[in-house]
Length: 225
Ligand SMILES: C[S@@+](CC[C@H](N)C(=O)[O-])C[C@H]1O[C@@H](n2cnc3c(N)ncnc32)[C@H](O)[C@@H]1O
Image 1 (spheres, rainbow, N blue to C red):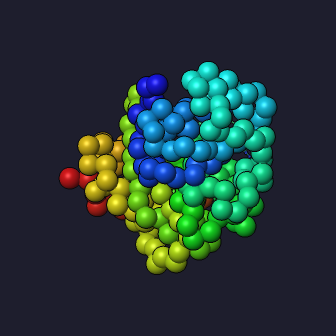
Image 2: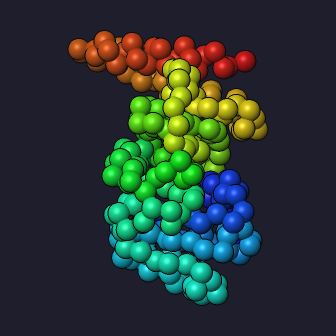
Image 3: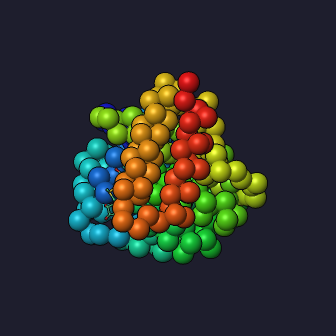
């Protein structure tokens, strides 16, 4: 099957032979692609909602990989046991929901667990949460799909000294995604500039928010050629 650039990038990061748990699997396309391309031989597809989980089961079974995949109705990592998965994918959700899923799933996330996170919003908040909760971000990628940019964060347990750049740009993002990085940063700069202008036009500008965004703008500005 052909994956969208966003899902393809996530799938391409999963090392061969991993035991994969796909949290919020929905269509199940990530495990399906990994089976079809002989990258993995076992996966656990999980979703909190029965309909998406059924969709995953139908797609994966129809492609002939039903025996290799377990389908679990699960709120976040609730129904995963320790050591059942070496790679955990959480994609296509908000960063705040991911923080909640990771917080509650801590008992099954050990030093060997690789997290592949693709937040739709609140990536800086998610990065800060990871740094403050004993994770390191090893790598980040940006993917462009139909004029939208998507962040993919690869994290695992470990301590990390972090900077504001790690929080707002991510770790190794420029090196890992050179083909889209310049456009991405210009986009982030424009969005940040618009937010600043909006705050300034307000009747009672929130000075903390203003300062926060002005600092972000400076960081983005450093990367614009
Ligand atoms: C927009 S879909 C993303 C599907 C796929 N991961 C992707 O990136 O294309 C979000 C999925 O996450 C599921 N979901 C939302 N909250 C969840 C939670 N707490 N635990 C597990 N799944 C959840 C939803 O039911 C939905 O199927």
